[in-house]
Amino acid sequence: MFKPTNVFFLNVYSQNTAIGVKGGINTSYLTGPNAPALSERQIGYNAGIFMRFRISDVMTVRPALSYTQKRYTFTHPIYMLQNGILSVDETNSYLSLPVMFTFQKGDNVINTFFCFGPEIALFVNNERKLKATSNGHDITAEAYYDFDISKYDYGASVGAGFQFKGFIFDARFFISLHPLYKGDNSLEMRYMNLVANLGYIINYRPAASFSRPTTWKSFKYKLKHIFK
Image (cartoon, rainbow, N blue to C red; front, side, top):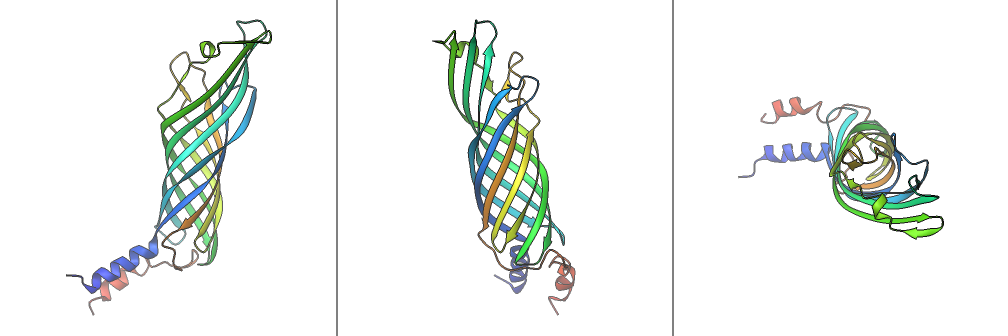
């Protein structure tokens, strides 16, 4: 039997929990002891879903699940060959799970926020285009670049953004803490990414602002008096 108390708890839950979709672009470049000097940032895409749980007057937790592309290109000398040059164009796809802790300030129409948190990712797919030359002649590139991508990645993100009604825009900087390639003989490199996303809260409804007590502050009072 559906009771009035169920309505109350559903109302509190909906006011403090948001569900949305998001998408955007990211630029990737490489860092680390073996990172190439001649590299170019390339555009990748991401899309996914997120949830946002409000846990205090100004703080929320926002986990997300995204399909993310990380693309980079670079050229690197092949030292064992005369005038040897290797060109790499690589796109790696991941299922990413960032969990952002967000501090928000503003009213129920527009607010700004600062966010930070960890991110883990599971490798899904690799698209690799190679070209190698020696003295201007094409040679077999795979013999000089056959590294396997690590099956997972993890790191940390920090960023900022703003929300206007149901729309959320944020920009984040991500640094990987795990090697890009696996194996003891692989090049030691890691990702660094700049990410820009636009999201929309599907169940958006005007709620308490991020500058005064939320419904969580009155939760105990409502619970105490709901049967009176």
